[in-house]
Amino acid sequence: MQQEAATGAEALEVWIDQDLCTGDGICAQYAPEVFELDIDGLAYVKNEQDELLQDKGAATPVPLTLLTDVVDSAKECPGECIHVRRVSDSVEVYGPDAG
Image 1 (cartoon, helix red, strand yellow):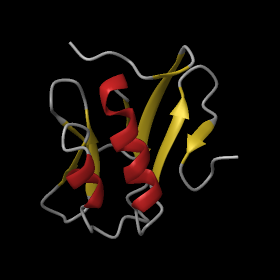
Image 2 (cartoon, rainbow, N blue to C red):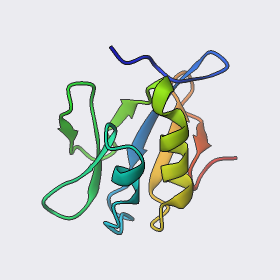
Image 3 (cartoon, one colour):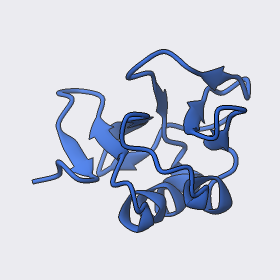
Image 4 (cartoon, helix red, strand yellow):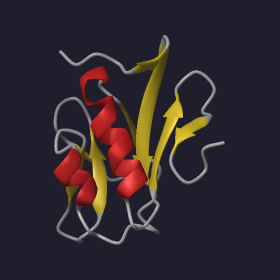
């Protein structure tokens, strides 16, 4: 079972804006448990059952054990398309729109 990530006690989720995805695959290298490149060459997030979530804006929980890898993916992404937000209020905490 994967645990939800927390900044303090805050659950986080991650989503990818495929319109900005460059298909470099850096995210899948950092956190293959969360990210995967599809046949279209773009990255998508996966759910806890390892299924690709291809709906626009689909988000998946960030497992606490993978928080650093997911954050590094967001920081290193050349397309700046990885968004990590708090579940409680949808405020982006890592990624291009983080405050």
